[in-house]
Amino acid sequence: MQMKRYIRLCCCLFAVMLPTICFGSLGEVSFCAVDDAVSTSDAMDIADVHTVTVQVNATTMGYVTGAGVYGHGDTVTLHAYANANCVFVGFNGANDNIDSVSFVVTNDTTITASFGRRFLDLFTSATDGTVAVDIEGTPGNVQVQPMQAEYNDSITLTVTPDSHYRFVYWEVNTYRLDTIVNSVLVLDRTWIDSTYVDVDGVEHEIWDSLYHYEEEVVVNRVSGGGVYYTNPLGMHITAHTEAHAVCIKESYNVTVVGDYVNVYGDGSYHFGDSVTLRATGMEFRHFVAWLNADGDTLSTENPWSFRVEGDTTIYAATALDIMHLSVSASHGGTVQGSGDYEYGLPATIIAIPDSGYSFIRWDDGDTNAVRVVYVYENLHFYAIFSHVGIDDADLSNVQVYAAEHSVIVKGAAQKSIRVFDAVGRQVISTKAADDMVRLTMEGAGVYMVQVGNGHVHRVILLQ
Image (cartoon, rainbow, N blue to C red; front, side, top):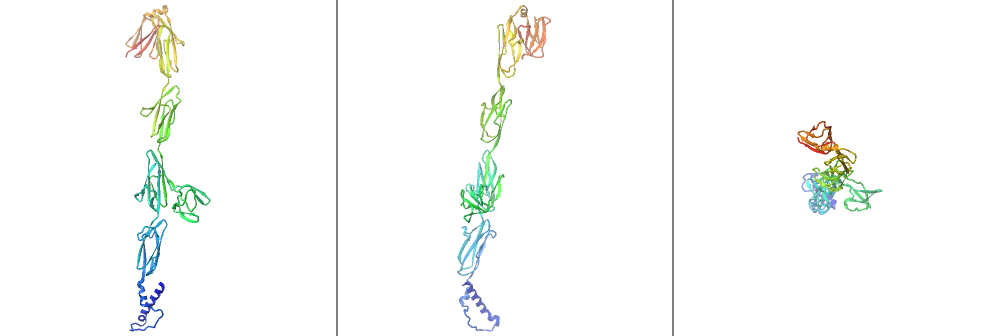
């Protein structure tokens, strides 16, 4: 009908113009009858032609077919086609994604067609942390999952680890697949990068949520994602994306220091871990306490358990074992030196005869009235005294006293004289030639003086 109308229109124009073209201005010209001649109503059909124009907002994102010249009352159908990674939004400002529209043309018409970039889903999560998302400079609402981003949008992911945790890496679009021949068995959410899957010969996007646990589908191309160790993480989104931040507990060092002791339990631990310290192998020593760096007591238990809250240095305090030394005597004198001593330290024992008695020996055979013993175990010594004879009786007149830096001994002619310091070391051994002897000492202190086998005199020299 439309083509026939165009032919008649052209014939009409040709018939009107022919006399002028062929004969010039000849006045009235008669025309013979022509079949299917152009009528007056047909001449008016030129006003019934309309143009349908389509304006596309972004020609790089898609195109529309169906625009052109139509006759009055014709039905026009427009089809919108989006390019790769783009979507059709709608005609004439609509946002309905309806990509085909039909209408009857009654006048010149302009239609707008809007395209946009493909919308992609963005899922975010974190282990022991909080995620913040920036999409093209705008904060994303992480409370609503998935978030929406347009294809190739610039996104920045930032995770803030929980207290005492640290960031390790991002997992982006990672998945686990078991391959069966040329198909895929979906064991978890399967991420496909701009790809379709074939189910029963029909292509579907994997994100249509049609694929469930253990469902078998054929995959054309699979993107495995990756692991990234940067925080914040920047990227351009080109597929539906899941990003998961992995954070782990901070690691702290527990250092244990101790002398003469074996300690167990030091090492590297995570925050909140329970640590048990044990001190062993203390020969001739015993455990006292666990101390901090300031010397404060943390615990006296061994073993001892506590929870890690940071780098820690702990000291294992020990002390020498305590040994007991006892001394006793026979009739005729007294002894000194009994008490508790740390293992291996020296102790001085003294045998002091009563008047009319003299020291003979200790039960181990030693004849020194003043002696030093080393306490490596619990010890006991017994002092043996004897009643003095005629020779020893002469010692009753002996006098011992201090004078300035010297020890004076009177009444000891031809008698042996021995002097010991406070720790039992013999510092002088001599024989008195005269009735009075002056013994010059090296310094101030306490000295024990024995004349013959008689009484031991205690003398104090001042500075």
